[in-house]
Image (cartoon, each protein chain N blue to C red):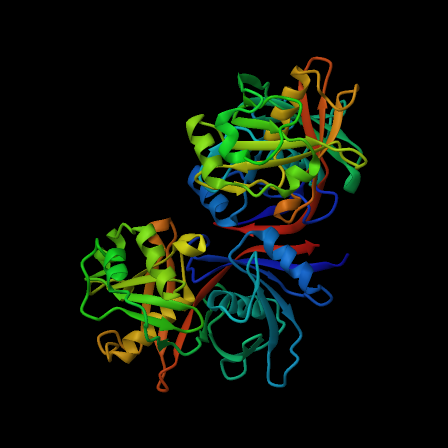
Length: 292
Length: 291
């Protein structure tokens, strides 16, 4: 048994405990898939990642991403957190403010600015597209959103790997005060093949964030997710598609997770090609070694 | 400020087989809110915080938190924390024992051996029978329909937390049972219990009993290795004169159905007290930076 470098991080967080935790095994050579899956089950975190030397030319490092149950080709918070871990450990260096992550979904560019706990890392999310609906969904959607006051944009089902229902509410207060009807949300996502429902609302002028977001995935066993990269990328894609980014600018800050005792902060931007980038700060909480 | 931190696997002969536990070894200066926030963040069944003892009889003081609340006592956190304290050199056994100070008072922890082979056991709070059920109790029918009961009748016990205990006819039955969560949750709700613990005697194995502990709402999860539920079961076996061996010791296999393979060592002493314990593996060693 070999001793390996290990970190447990808090991603999309300005302070420990505010964001989404991630376990990173920094030297995963000679761990087989079964051992990776067993360790990811044992940590009980939403994701555990394993860093390997890159195989493809141009990659800064290679990562494999596991939930307690399965391997994922890509996910936002594990990518941002793993890049932070790799930089902290000195395993790679940004070139012109960029890293290239090799993962099962291919080579992904990442941007890096700053250092340490104030370092900001962003990853380009897979392109989100509106998915056409072939089933009558209107009643299920109305039932899932029976409580809160709605915003101006029409709801949409956006597919960027997972598919998210993206729904604007009247404002940030409506988002924060929403009491989700989990059974109705489950019925909606089940009927339409969505992973969850994400609601967003504009924050009052002068806030330190521009949007408040909440994400519900009750059919997946997660009543509410504290900080969600893919849901925020889906919201950005829909705002872009509707031409509604002008009010926010091409770069804005999201607050998510306060209703669950967290305080996640996600920096979202849409570039000139219309690609959504998801990023933020990462806190290194646990630093040590792993015997597995 | 970085604090010494370990993440352990309790009731495990090798990493991954047991029940995980996070231990913050120097928790002085962390307030209740910070401890609760850390315990929520680790997402483990329990996180413990080691503090200097407040009385000379105690080896160390321990506070135990689940992701939702502080817990006065629990078996696997006590065993794991004692292991961490010994490895860090924060206390030494006296007469083969440590004394843990926790919210329920001073608890003796037995220490045998060293390093990887070290065995720890904690004396569990006395458990009592609340109600003995009928051999084919209708209240358990929904949870266990299609399974043959073992020799003992089902029983509702209180060992700090309440459990329904039900013996099945053989090991294969226990292992193939697919939890009927609605029925387990109904049992838990109707009797203010944690849930249902099923067990069977085994032959030709390196363990004497197979146990599965099904926790009702809100969790609806199966425990990988339950110190307290097993201690309650040992008290029941003792009460009925049904312990596997005359010396009061036996070994339990638990957790295979949820991807683990834990071993728990149970002992009922001459006074009728139950000791539950086993081995601990140190998986992560390092520092925690929270404040």
